[in-house]
Amino acid sequence: MSDLDASLDWLDALTWDKDGLITSIAQDAASGRVLMCAWMNRDALRETVASGNAVYWSRSRQRLWRKGEESGHGQKVISIRADCDGDVLLLSIDQVGGIACHTGRESCFFLELQGQRWVPVDPVLKDPKEIYKK
Image (tube, rainbow, N blue to C red; front, top):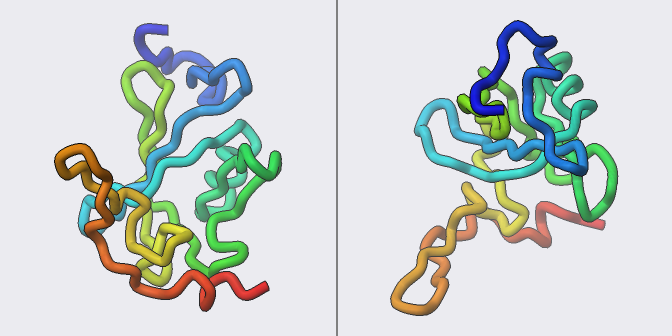
């Protein structure tokens, strides 16, 4: 698909990969910072739209992942956009607790290439051991 076909059902208009997934980027609505990238399947997107809270597909767990279900750091969805090809979603979100990453950082994009090394450049806001008490 070269352009999203708006005449189709909203789910059918999107371009899903061979596993029935679509890339989904979460961006802080206030700051504009990209916080994370995850996958959605049709059920995750339907539930996200219905609940107003971000729901993703966990490829490692092979199940729906309701952002914040363990950490308490959920995402309230302000808006959802699709790119022109319909193969990437951009969620404008309000990040509950200010932490999107399982490492305790604001964003999953905390590693910066410096020379030929990836260096963490953002602080840990909360120790993951305090977030994920099992």
